[in-house]
Each structure stands twice: as structure tokens, then as C-alpha cells.
Image 1 (tube, rainbow, N blue to C red):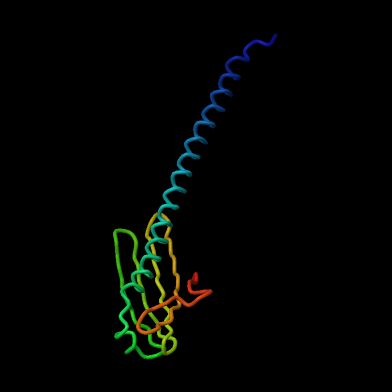
Image 2 (cartoon, helix red, strand yellow):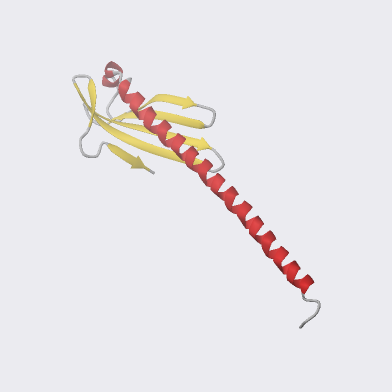
Amino acid sequence: MRRGIALPAMLFVLTLVSALAVSGVYAARRLGAIQRDGEAAQRVELAVEQALVDAVVGWDSTGRALQPIGAVAPLATADSSSTNVSVWVTRIARNVYWIVAEASDAARIPLHRRIGLLIHVVAGVPEAVPERAWTELP
């Protein structure tokens, strides 16, 4: 039987337990950060989609009819506590418009989302172009 092995064995066990505790704390913090980033990404996605919906709901047929073809006009800009949203419309043809909404969030990591909506105006009422009306933009 070897004598004097108890102290090194206990130090080794304490080192392993400490390493497990530190790794557990690290994993919990990473999961919390991932969850916060996911929530911020959802805020940005909801803000940009809501901005497009608001642009279509509040469509100004008279004002858009006066917009020259090829011209870009800002529709709205909104700044909340952490999310900034901008919307603009481009007249592509006589009755076809391209609405683009862009949102960004200055959370822990900068998040950015931009989507576009192609609409066709019939009798002053905007309608989404069938097939590929919504487009994810870089």
C-alpha cells in the first residue's frame, strides 16, 4: 500500500469539481446570451414586417400617383429605445411600386434586417404582386 496518496488525490478531485463548476457557469451564461440575441432578432423582424404592413395600410394613392417613375420617397422613420426602422417607396412603373423596410437593433451584437414588398395598385388600392411579393434583401 502506498502512503501519502490521499492529499494529491483530493487536490485532483477538487480541481475537477472546480473545472466542472466553471464550465457550468460558462454554459449558462452562453445560453442566456443566445436567448437575448434571439429576442433582439425577433424584435427586429417584427419591427420591419410591421413597418411594411403599416406602409401598405396607410397607402396614399394621391401622393404616390404624383411620384415620378424611378423616384424614391421616404415613407416613415421610427426610432424606439433600441430598434430603428426606415421605410421608403420606389415607383417602378405606372402602377407598380417597390416598398423597402429596414430595421436595425443596437443590442449586444448589431442586428440588421431589410425586406422589400412589390405591390401593384389597382383603382387606388395596393395589392401584393402574386408569387414573389416579399423579398429578403441583403
